[in-house]
Amino acid sequence: MLSHQRLVILDRDGVINQDSDAYIKSLDEWIPYPTAIQAIAQLSKAGWTVAIATNQSGIARGYYDTAVLTEMHDRLNQLVEKAGGQISHIAYCPHGPDDDCDCRKPKTGLMRQIQQHLGLESLEKAWVVGDSLRDLQAGSAMGCHVALVRTGKGFLTESKGFNLEGVMVFDDLAAFTEWLLSAEDDAS
Ligand SMILES: O=P(O)(O)OC[C@@H](O)[C@H]1O[C@@H](OP(=O)(O)O)[C@@H](O)[C@@H](O)[C@@H]1O
Ligand SMILES: [Mg+2]
Ligand SMILES: [Zn+2]
Image (cartoon, rainbow, N blue to C red; front, side, top):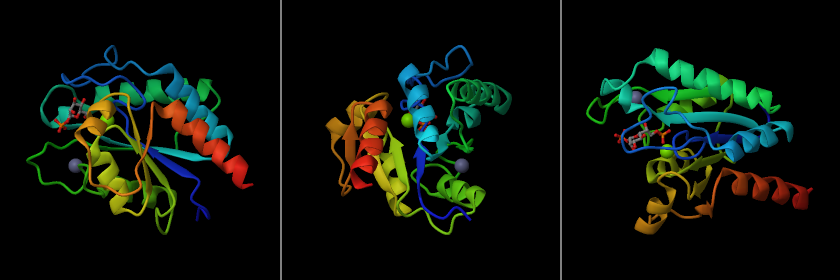
């Protein structure tokens, strides 16, 4: 049982890699933010557990399949491991908006999958970092701390406004990571 919640759950598109309104449909279209890869490695090296919770409705829409998604996630894991870090679990929702599944954010099924995979009693005190309101809603529903990044759809999400308490806003994942690790230093 992982005792304390030094856990960060990341949204993928728009946080770790560039997003597109045309979906990320192939390995060639999956373009990571270099600073995000470094940030994930930094979190790992500082003893944080990193997991990912991502909606992938492009599968239900027929734009790509799970084999292509696996190629993207293998590349992501390679890059993070090469930078000295690791990703503990990638939870994805392959369903579409009309499939009424339990896992499409803002529902909490992906978060609960990560919780179960890590053997945690709760996700309270874990951090959820996303670029869309649904990411923050899913995290908030699980009692997590939530942070919005301005990359991907984040700037638009911020400009639209949201009625969620306690959302911290950062320019990107690197800025969130720098804040989190320095806040921890100050507290120690
Ligand atoms: O940000 P995460 O959860 O990692 O992934 C988001 C993607 O699955 C896609 O989600 C879609 O939303 P709809 O699924 O069509 O509502 C659109 O926002 C696309 O632009 C985006 O690439
Ligand atoms: Mg996103
Ligand atoms: Zn689903």
